[in-house]
Length: 212
Image 1 (cartoon, helix red, strand yellow):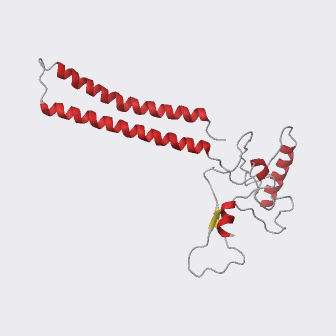
Image 2: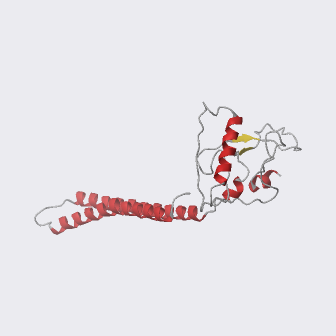
Image 3: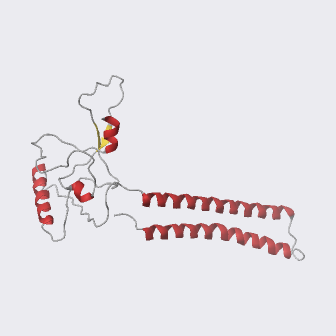
């Protein structure tokens, strides 16, 4: 369901602590070393060239420390943005089950559909289960499938540009309800939407606004 707030906060604190430890501490140690050498100048002569080099090193280390702190601030801002951003579906009280059917037993589409339909019926019968749906690729799973499409009735493209493309998923009836994805217009899939029925699709509001 994603990273918890506690995990993100702990990661941020570890990053800030590491930046402070490996940047501020060496700079402070170098500064302290130069200061002690200055106090002990009577017994140990420190040349001007070496003193200048040490001061430059301290300034560089403090500059790197400042850059790390600024980067940590940007990281914190990005994490807050990710946590507060709505993904378009609900993640609370959802359980995900990943299934990879063996091709030796489920090599054709018909046997796969039989398996999934029976699985859906059995899971629906479990007490406490309210919604169930299947999808070939989960959102934000790192994998996607896209394809070009054409709009019926639209004039033919004579500019030579590529046709528009869109990422798509293959889902079962009940998927949008199970994921808490609101329907803006139209209807969701039902049991009559099969290979022998009329071709149907559900598009995102952004695609509908852009092309329709």
